[in-house]
Image (cartoon, rainbow, N blue to C red):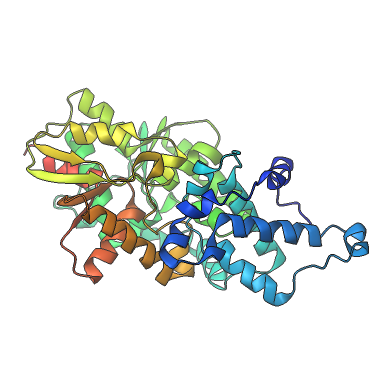
Length: 395
């Protein structure tokens, strides 16, 4: 075993932790479970012990032992029961890049053979089906058939300037499929020339990094880039913040990239989206990857303010302080109960605003919050911002 999964910067940053525990105060997993062992500070201490136990001859001379199998198992529980929301990094007073560190730590755990069995399922699904849910990738654009008036070409065109990269969740989950349907109807109404990739769209890579499977990523990245080049594309459009964030950070700067909120803002400014009045009070949930990750807070709010009659109230914790919905970091696959506990706290905060609907800009956030709302028969509408704009379109 070695420490090769960490950059030099990360190895230096590990020694900068002051044990202030501010990260534990804002951790959604800790708040929902009341388990301090899920906190960043506990994880950091465990990581330092692991690294010291690998120190070679000097460590053995000083009597430092590598973790036992039972200690590895306990540590794995805190490493993978994290939503990767980035709130710990947001509040860290010494500026440690904690989210990147957790991704490297997960990769280390996989290389070391200490990880939840569900990770094997994620790996197999991606390797065999090119998506994290083990669905037939040939059916990635079948949601188009559920539209009221689907085009003959199914939006899969030979060439186009813009490619709409749908994402795995929106492609396969009925609850989330309403998002791409709403977005393409808005694009049609605005006379935007675009195409889907269909079966040529492979997972963006985010679930791989979250599962510690970064070794798989280059194959997927290379394929997706070539698929875009084949279309002659100049711009890639995402409704999924995680896909958008992956392309921002891990793909080459070859194409212009836009999140749906940014793209809609431009269309509305150009008066290409005719909007009618909506009598609705809404609040807005900042997705972790779009907000804290990409620092995009204004575009979705500008879209909301552009809808006549809409009343908008902020959540008590918003923008960079917005609390995770519980749907990130592959947590639902690893610990569905903890994911639901985090969603419960999120819904309680939303209900405190008195809003009729919670609006977000993430298919996974919609899926996670709507699942909790439906299971618990809560009177609250959960919508992606594309669905809200589609509702406001003047017929």
